[in-house]
Image 1 (tube, rainbow, N blue to C red):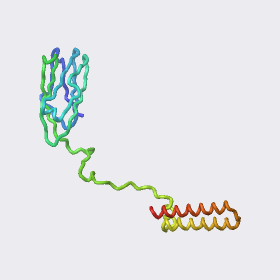
Image 2 (image 1 turned 135 degrees about the vertical axis):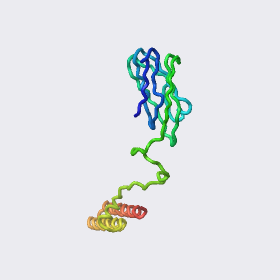
Image 3 (image 1 turned 30 degrees about the vertical axis):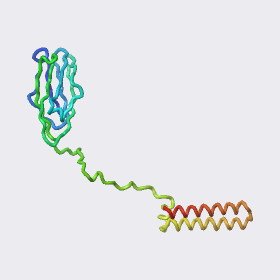
Length: 191
């Protein structure tokens, strides 16, 4: 981050020493360097400069013999903008001006260029395959045929056990298995 240094109280109370001009292409700090007594400093951007730069607060208290940075946000433009920064102390008794030029930024490797291609829908993220799809991939065949084969095997086993044991409960279980297979095959065909 670039820095514009302003010396305060160096040549007497409320004196201001600031550069005549300053150039930047990025946000910068106005470093208020106080050489003596505590002082209030008022910073103001003219209308031209305030179109591309912003100081959150205009009035700043600077402790005796201390430094205080004041951040200036900059909105980069495609063309250069030149304006004036007003620096005042002693409630306007002393005033200094610095001409500030905000240049368009140079090519920055961290900068991202946005174009119309970002507005186009991107590919859907891949979804995890269903259990039937995983089984079909392992078997190398259709998920529906594989599911139907397992269902047929389950029904045959249920009927064989029901006839061997001659039990109503087992027959009812075989019917439930048959209904489950029909529903599963129907869902697999739908997907």
